[in-house]
Length: 286
Image 1: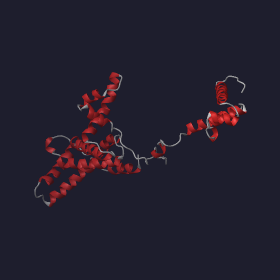
Image 2 (image 1 turned 90 degrees about the horizontal axis):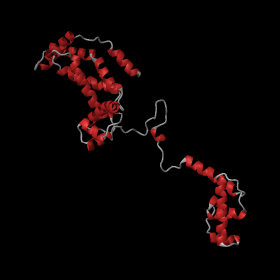
Image 3 (image 1 turned 30 degrees about the horizontal axis):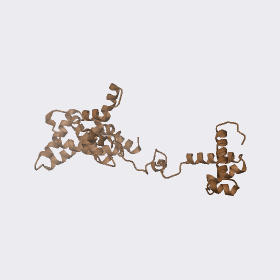
Image 4 (image 1 turned 135 degrees about the horizontal axis):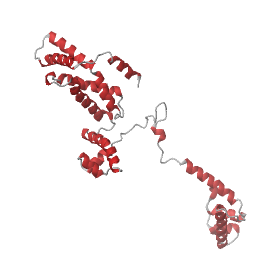
């Protein structure tokens, strides 16, 4: 828990909780101030004091609701949700009718919840989704574990569509955006300077493991060829262009070595067979 949240919790702990009768008295003062077309200065002062006291003494409820939805937040921290929840409770105080008999906490809970969830759906994601899409995604997240426990498998798209009463094509589009987009400059973990961009592979970059394998293979092949006869070494090196040499045809190699093209082919076949057998582990005299 950050220091700012600790300071906030310590600050609101100074305000005592209200009982039901105190809430009714304060709410009546607020209603008298708000409902009056021309309130007196005394009604205004009393209404504002009652409004502020109802607000301060119920901030703990805002924190409880904000903590419940903080696990769904991608970018917003707890203080952001507390702020939005406080705005929702301010609306609840203005709308609360104490004559209906229910507790203020029961009534204000839904206003706080609405403010927090609306904020998350509109501002928490980099790519905003419609409110209905967020509702269906949340609904699925709660339903999937129970379905998997009951049936021993994950549900199909059609079963999910039937549960949410959303067409499969539209639901597939919703589910494709369950995970939010992230900045490549975001750190991969706390207390580290490594960002996501450092962990993304470059498709055009040379594979280090593959390069190492080729390097080791080339060195091994070079040592094996050194054990062949001089003619066989010349034929393999120049016919296949090994070690950066220019590729030559069998006819050109025959002229260079003073032998026929067919003889060059025979020597090449013999040399390759020796290399294959030696690589396979057979004891062949090269």
